[in-house]
Length: 256
Image (cartoon, rainbow, N blue to C red; front, side, top):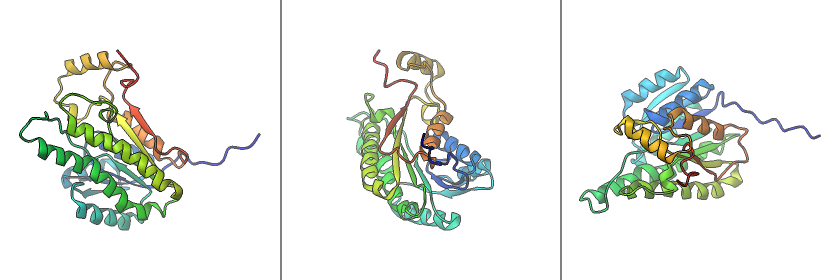
């Protein structure tokens, strides 16, 4: 019997950029990566909140204020991260906003453009800024966080649905473009997760929705998404690319 090749299941010492890391799934991802020995660049809009999360992550983490809708800021911050840490191995595009808006709302156009800027355009800009450093890594990994709204749709949510559907397509395109260089690009589609975006939903409504729509009959925790992200960025995850993976408690699997 042929021996299995030696494929590391450790990200210790790897440099990871996590956007939208001040709360929710981004914070959970940053903390989990740090607990696994990675050196983490914690990025989000608010410098103080980023600093607090970086402190939670330990001495191997550093905070960077970043508005992912700002093209110049992305170029500047990614270059600074690479200089501070000596490179980049992992990019997690997690930053997102709530953009629920009816089609005939007076503010629709503004919300539409903001949704695409933060949750789609920013992804490709982050990848383009990080790609020179990722190419120098021996196990370069990109994970884009989309949503089950990118696999289906909720009424009145077209800006968010369009942005997240775009992320799934962008992931596949990037996987094909970057695959020859050994850079893997995958996408996670979280379902109903307890984050700041869902905080306003009363608990009783969460329970009703989860029991009606998910196979596991509950909302997920941010850490459950973070663990899937970790699985995809391991050096051993070297033959997984272009995948779009729901982490949704069975929401997509269930018909009724």
